[in-house]
Length: 131
Image 1: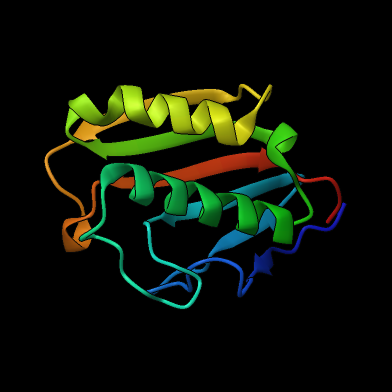
Image 2: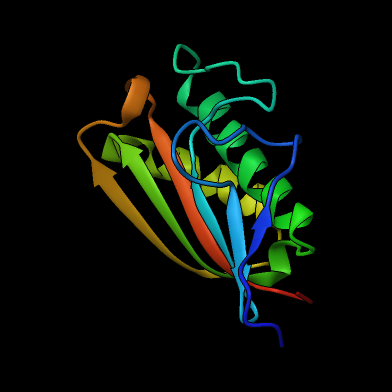
């Protein structure tokens, strides 16, 4: 196994908007940066409903996972930051729909606010198929 860090970048997910990368792969693990509900073209969706934002953030996460050579079954741990604990049930339905039978370890963290006024951010760690 290589000891170098591999950078993952895909145009199928929101581009990195700061001093970070979409994901890194190191020693058999994929580390996916926090994904806000920004489209792959860089369009902000903070004015959209929670459900649309949640789907976009999940879409970004899954596109980056795929670019790293993985799929939902490779997810080990997902952390979800939600503005408004009342959004938890809606998120859980979308999450289950988009991941199907895959049930990685997960934490849902209610927060008072997120950057740009978004309602959700998601990051994850996954097992790498190959480096």
